Amino acid sequence: MPIYTPSEAFILSSFITTGTSFTTSQTTTRIKVELWGGGGAGGGGGTAASNAAPARGGGAGSYALKIFDVTPNTAYTYAIGIAGVAGGAGAVNGGAGGSTTFAVSGVTVTAPGGTGGAGTSASTTAESLPGGAGGAVATNGDVNGSGESGHTAVRFSGTVACSSKGGSTIVGAAGNGRTTQGNGNAGTGNGSGGGGGCVINGGGAADGGGGTKGAILVTEYSTDPVIKFPNLILRSVTRLVTGTAHITGPSTNLIEIELVGGGGGGGGCDGIVSTVTCCSGGGAGGYGKKLFVVTPNTSYTYALGAAGAGGIAGNNPGTAGGDTTFTVSGVTVTAKGGSGGLGSLGAAATLAQRGGPGGVAGTNGDVNAAGMPGEVCIRQGIVFVVGTCGGSTLWGKGGIATSIAAAGSAAIGNGAGGGGATSTSATNRAGGTGTIGMILVTEYELA
Image 1 (cartoon, rainbow, N blue to C red):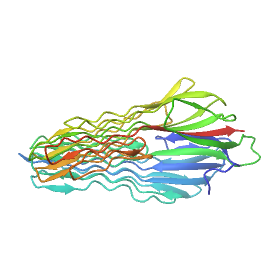
Image 2 (cartoon, helix red, strand yellow):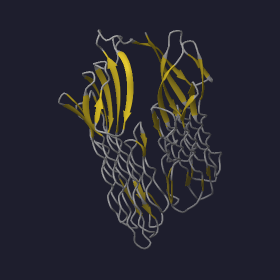
Image 3 (cartoon, helix red, strand yellow):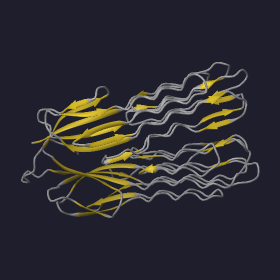
Image 4 (cartoon, rainbow, N blue to C red):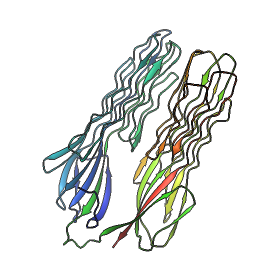
C-alpha cells in the first residue's frame, strides 16, 4: 500500500512519547505509523585493585512502519517501550529496552527494545567485549527493521581500557563510550542505547548509562472522496547544499523540511620515532524535521552547517561542524553540528581515546535528534594501532577507520564526521574532514 497517492489528503503528524491511546481526527481514514523500541542501557563496571572493567553499551530499539486504514474519531491503543535501566556499579548488566506497539483492528505492530549491555568484571586480561544486541526484527509492519547493536568494549590491561557506546536510531543518539574512569553516558532522544561504565586501574565501580524510551510517529491522511478536505499535491523535492535562501514554488503552501548539522573533523596526530599513535573520529551532525505552512513564491532563509576541518597534522583536535538552520515566520529550526575528534601524541603506552560527540539535539523541530558520535581509537603499545570512523547520518558516511599510517579519511555525503589519523613513525598526519550539513525541502500544495 503506498504511503501517499494523489487522492490522499494529508492532515497532520504526531510524535508520541507518552500515553497509551491515540484518537484519529474527524476526517482521518488512513494512518502511517512509525515505531521505535526502547534502547537498552549500558552495563556497569566492577572494581579490584590495579584492574580495569570496561562495560558494554546497550543496543538500540528496532524500527517498524505500517499503513493502516482506520475510522475517523476513533481511539487506538499503543505502548511506548520503556528505557533500559542503567546497569549498577559492580558488573551489573544494563536493562533491556521495552517493545513499542500500536494496534488497529486486531493487528499489533511491534518494534522490540534493544538488549542491555553486559556488565564487566575487573581484570587485567586483554580482550574485546561485544555490546548488547539491537532490538530483534520488528513484526507485522510493512517495513520491519532491527536495531543497531551496542559497540565493542576493549581492555588492554589494568590501566588502559575503553567502554563502548550504545546503538543509535534516526531519532536518538547513543551514549558514548569512555576511556577514563566514570559512569557510562546516557543515550539521548528516543530508542538509543546507553554507554557502558568504565573502571580504570582499580578506580571505584561505575554505573552504566541509561537507554532512552521508544517513540511513535503517526501521520494522518484522508482517502474518503466525500470528505471536503483539500488534496495534498506533491510539487517538488529540493536538496539544499549551497546558498542561503529558498523560494517556494508558485502553488506551494506547505513544506516539510529535514535538516542535518555539519559533521566534525577527525583528530590529527603527532608522530614520534619508534612509536605509534591514533586519533578519534569526529561526531555526526544532529537531525531535525518540521512541517511549516508557507506562502507561495516567498523566500525563506537558511544556513548550512559548515564541515568540520580535520585536525592539522600534529597533536590537534578536529574542529566542530556548524549548525544548520531554516527559518519560517520567525521560527528557526536548528540541527546542531558534531564535535571534532581528539588529537594525539606518539607514545609507546597503550591508549584508548573517545570519539567526538555527535551534535546535541536541536531546537524547534517536530523531531529533534542528536547525532552519532565518532568511534573510539585504539593503540596497543608500539605494535597495533587503529584510527577510527567518524559518525554517520542518514545522508552521509563517516570517514573510515585505518590500521596503517595514514591521514584520517574524509567523510562523504552530508553531516558525517571525518576519520581519525594514525602514525607509526615521526610523520605528523592530519585528521579527515567532516561534511557540510544539508536541508531537504519537500513542497506541497493544499489544493
